Image (cartoon, rainbow, N blue to C red; front, side):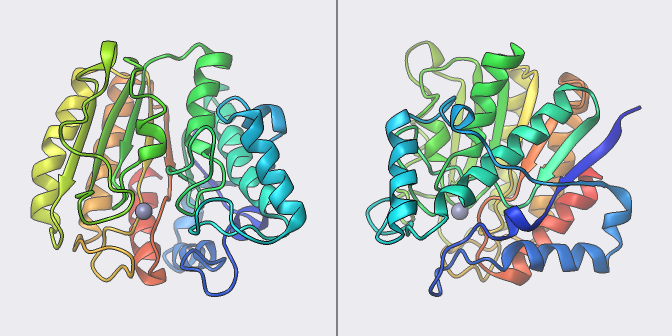
Length: 313
Ligand SMILES: [Zn+2]
């Protein structure tokens, strides 16, 4: 029997963050890991090390122009990768490449049958587009995994679940017309929060119409509103019979996050991890990759991600 869960933590991932008091700092992995150790959860998982992605691997999802742009800005070492959310600094290329490379390492372990599930707390950079960085996301590790599943492993029907408080626009728009990318995204209503997308009417385009489910929650919504939406999301996921599952479990929907205005408790993260794991076991031979996503209050992200770890281990 393969190990149940591989957890990816390490120095290469810990340093994914931005300087000068940016909300996404380099203290997030440490906050999670010290809580996981305190709870003894490290005893229940196999801890594996991160690695860098190659340029070829990044270009499975990203345009060569975007990869070159990040490389150049990383060498110059100042300014922004986008319009002002995602700063450039010396080495930012390697920081982004570590998140994507680790996701590929995790994918390879799952596809080799060495582990059933993986969790990468520093990952799930769902705002980066094929051709640009956005919203603190240098490269989109999730998109690199999805395109690698298709091109290298012949896995077409991928289920993507995203409970980060922000809409997963980098995934939604990359696969909007792709009928085999099954998409469920519960987020704060885009009329009130970055990136402003993810309306309920956005259900996929052309052949993919009906394969995507965007479930906006009004500002100040909590567990009650989330679970009402989640019933629909879970049914949608099961109905479309994915072969492989990806979970982006951002912690920024918890009460007190400095960048958003929802009021979830960690019951949301525990329940979603449990349900998604059950669907993976039923339909996907157990294959599930989870990513930490956003979360800008250190206590919140430690609580949410250890709740996920407990359910997946
Ligand atoms: Zn977020």
